[in-house]
Amino acid sequence: MRYSHSSMETFRNCPLQFKYKYIEKVDIPIKNNIEAFMGSMVHNTLEKLYTDLKYNKLLSLEEVLDYYNKSWTDNFSFDKVEIIREGYTEENYKSLGQDYLKNYYNTYKPFNQGKTIGLEMQVNISLYDKERQKTYDLIGYIDRLSLVSDNHIEIIDYKTNNSAKTQQEVDVDKQLALYSIAIKEKFPFVEKIDLCWFFLSAGIKQVSTRTVDDLEKLKQETIEIIREIEDSKQKNNFPGKPSALCDWCAFRSICPFKAHDVITKNLSENEYLKEEGVFLVDKYQEFTEKKKALLEKIDPEIEKVKEAIINYSKKNNLEKLFGKEKSLIVKEYSSFKIPEKKSKEREELETLLKENNFWPLVSDLSYIEISNLIKNNFFESSFKEKLLKYLKEEKINRLYLNKK
Image 1: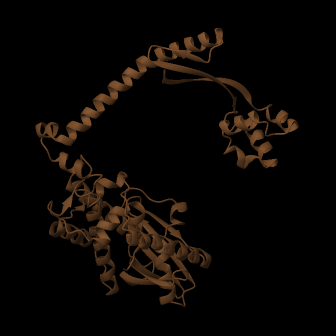
Image 2 (image 1 turned 60 degrees about the horizontal axis):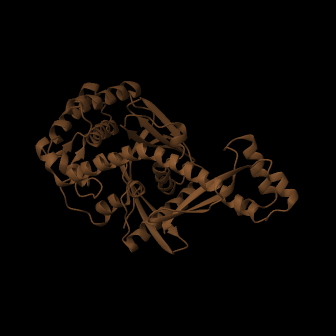
Image 3 (image 1 turned 180 degrees about the vertical axis):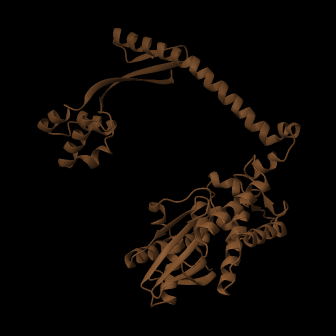
């Protein structure tokens, strides 16, 4: 199997989607979402602009927009493209793409910032896994490769998503960094490779670089995610991972987490209310809410009775009470309250335990563990005295209902 940044990201986001798309290659009618469609139309138009520039033909802005509009008209169909976000139309997205192209054109005309040496350029990367003695093949496509000077190349990616990434985010981005590995091999004379993202919605260009050590680390991280995929294939273990991305998934109609939502959204209101799954969920919700209301009403009454039982048992020096059918054991335990997190006392207590090598014994400051250790006289008296400065002893009563 040939991997790609896209396929690995799919696995990270949802292994089940990866299975549908890359393992089973499920044959179902798949609609492109409007955001992806608009992005592809913008990319195709920019590819046309730079292709013509290679032949010393500079398109006017009007020609660029004409090409974009014609491509949109020729390729758009509601049978193939769907709009997920409610309240927006095809025209909204189409005009958005036009704005991106206008802004880009007016900012970078006459497009002489570098010499284009690749458009939609395929790159291939081979990574050798020493541990498993296997070679993994990766494939990718660079939107544009630009030679800025004799020893300086830019790997360019156009982004049409709503928001631009921060510098911190692009500095850890894996996709273009992976492509730079292939470019360095293809053009060994290059001394500087810049990774460049054009966020068209914001009109921002972000630039990042990678060191040799960065790329070696990336290679290892990539090998590790591929190992995870290979292991999942061997075990046929691809769990679904529901998230906000599910509404944009092409396989939601067959996904166990989204299929029912897809079915019921297509029903009329009357059919929706009669659908068995909807009925069962609503009924479960109804009973759950009734139970919650009942507990809110009965819990205070239970606490009153519990308090009366404890008082009665103490007054009469009894540890076991008897009713008509059941008996009740009344137990009192000593426990120690631990200082609140982030408080000065809590920090001092943690330091005291760690310095005396008791930290592993208390399960990250479990009050149960500390209480048991104190109760069983585990600590020396001098240390116990220091410890009790931070702990407040409490009495806890518990009731155990049994057969009579």
